[in-house]
Length: 175
Image 1: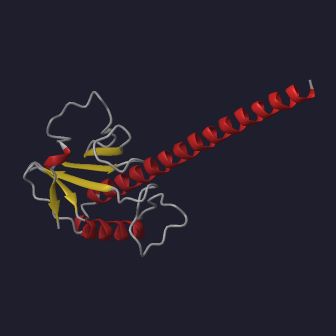
Image 2: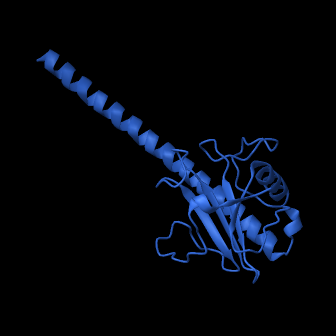
Image 3: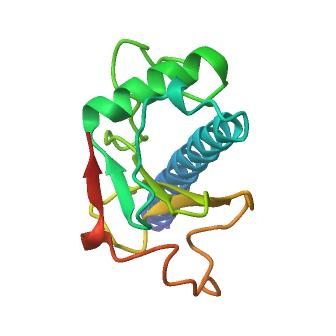
């Protein structure tokens, strides 16, 4: 009888341990996701704020007004983040060293894309590839704005404007 109680207690403890590990893992994934989304929205809001000020020279991104999406190269991305961080709170991790690139919680740069058409409408899209680090998968996180109409979410299934979010393979590079 004593031996049976020992085994039952051992099985219950193992089940509790496994449940605890899965709970902690889920909590950590949730925290990383929220941290990435907070940083995405902070960067987006900082860029929209600069566009509203007509202060485009602050981040030195020259996007042609040809109606195509342009993705920033790493050096332009780093320069933009360095200049934005001086004027805005980008909700970065406390341990982030400003001399290094700003990375998402999974170790990748955020992808910042701009759209500018001849009638002065700007589109901004900022995406993290998420935990799998692969583009165009369900775990990707993003936020977008179509200035002067901030608040459009790239993940919104009702967003049907074809000129707003093209296929990922259509991005051109801004140097």
